[in-house]
Image (cartoon, rainbow, N blue to C red; front, side):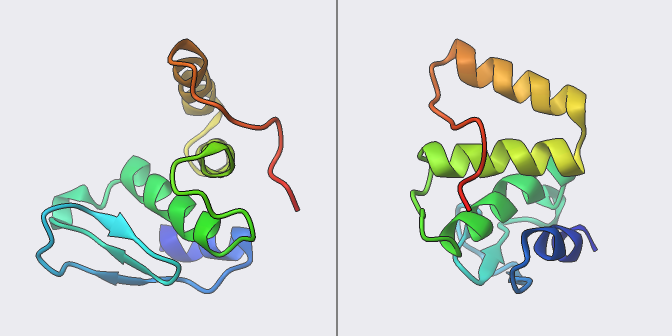
Amino acid sequence: AVVYKISQWAEIKPPEITEDGHEITYATKDKISFTYPALKTLPYICHEMSHVINYNSQYADHHGKYFTTVYLSVVKQFIGLTAYRELQEAFDRTKVIYLTSVPS
C-alpha cells in the first residue's frame, strides 16, 4: 500500500515488487527487488522508492545529490518530520550533498 501511495505522491507508475533471490535489495526505474520479505519496512521502502522516483526523473544519479534530495522529501512525507530532521542531520554530519528542494 505504501509503495502505491508514494508512487501517487511522486506521480509515477508503481514499480513491480519482487523477491527474486538477489544478494542485495535494489531498485530500477520500474522494479524493486527485495532479498527478504523482512526488509519490507517503511524506512527501506522509502529508500528504494526514492531510487525509483530518481530513476524516473531527468536527474537520475543513484546516490547523488538529486537522489538524496528525493530521499529527504520521501522521508518527510511518509515517515515524518522527526525522521526527516534526523536524516538531514546525519547527511550534514557526514557531508552528504543534497539540495534544498527537488528540481521540477
